Length: 250
Image (cartoon, rainbow, N blue to C red; front, side, top):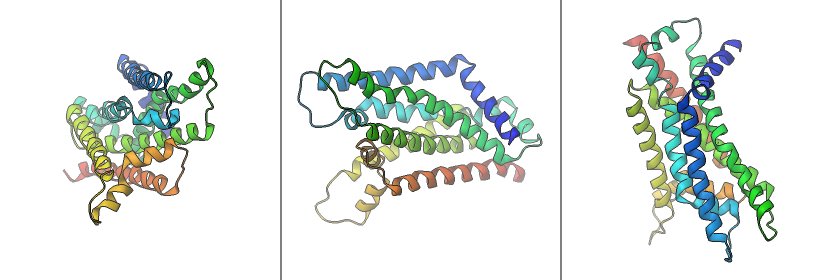
């Protein structure tokens, strides 16, 4: 356990003790702030039938930052170690591959959550400074936070797997962004109403990240999306373990 905590602390330090980490956090807050301003503009003096927690994930800046920040955070996890020549040194130390992978995953995941955590205060800021009384649904805020946490775990695991496949951080970032964007596009296809019932439409609805985020933002906590994203997270961590372990066969 002490080995895992030491490696996790090392991974977190690489984010928080570098200018790169603070640039990422500043970029996340800039785009999330742009989403907040968009929602405030839409709600300013106008009747709107959606609560803040449901409208906020529908802004384009929200999905832009969610899809872009994951590749930027995870692209260095293994690719940088390989390109700098420290990967073999790390993997020949008396630690297991699983400890290294979990430490890099949790280090990246904790940094991701630290970057997104201020977003959960936006509804309460609006409630405090609005001229009219705004009722904030605490359950919906917590549900939205749960959705972002599950999405973050999935994207971090997918990013770690992409980074383990290559020595180039750019290639790792492109692979992660392409996979996330593909799921985002599939979510739009799931919203289409086909003229006749097709076998693929229920599948698209089941894997639609847009539909899942919409449910979380309205306060709906369904066990199926939770199991779905936890399963995908475990799957990509397992694939990362196999990818890292394949060095013994080369």
